Image (cartoon, rainbow, N blue to C red):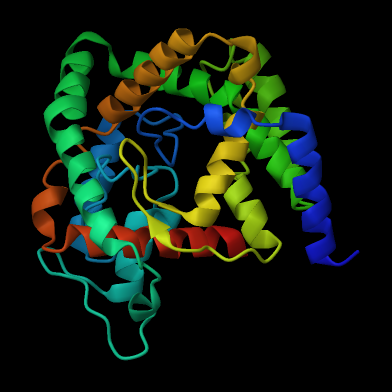
Length: 303
């Protein structure tokens, strides 16, 4: 069956099953792109130091702009991809040579995106970061990692389903195996036992599924309270929200809202040291984050 026809059938099936749920379930707060697995914040800080001194990764990727450098996957992080592509030095602005991919980034809504980007940065600086700092003084690091693992475990369904949608059956089996291991031996997912056994996450989402079937990324987009997106990834995020089992087992808006706040503050707390000083290390933060995001998404779709 041609890929285009498969895509039509897939989207039609999802529309029938989930109806209008996707719009209502769009995340309300900052959604962090990666999950920290089983490493404590101290490890992340070490990674951040290595990143800057080695000059082979991108300068700043702030949670305000909604990136999270995964300390277990440095090479594929938005930060690593940015400098790998541009050769940017600390304290400088990425520059594009003639024909460089940076010149081809599709951002027709830049006049809207830049103020929204600055709004999200200020939200992080004046609200999220202080809250995470206070949270970090009360909650031990290991407990924060356990909380992050727990949230990640219950959100396995979108990763499993998107692996199936893309015909990546090994990824789907890994996700199912991880859920079984972590939900039982890992005490409800608080411990990532599956990772200790070498069973890694598939990291698939519906934005990648659309890209897999040839749907273009569309314009780059920044919205308040959300991470950078493209139109394709925004649609994908809505569908992934409909696939999230919490939407059905925790149907009450305020309960889900409180859980999302807890997840967001916990994840920001885990990365306090990682992002310290990154904001001052680049002049054009907006362009740097845009380039890092688009390159990372491109790489993920090709994998």
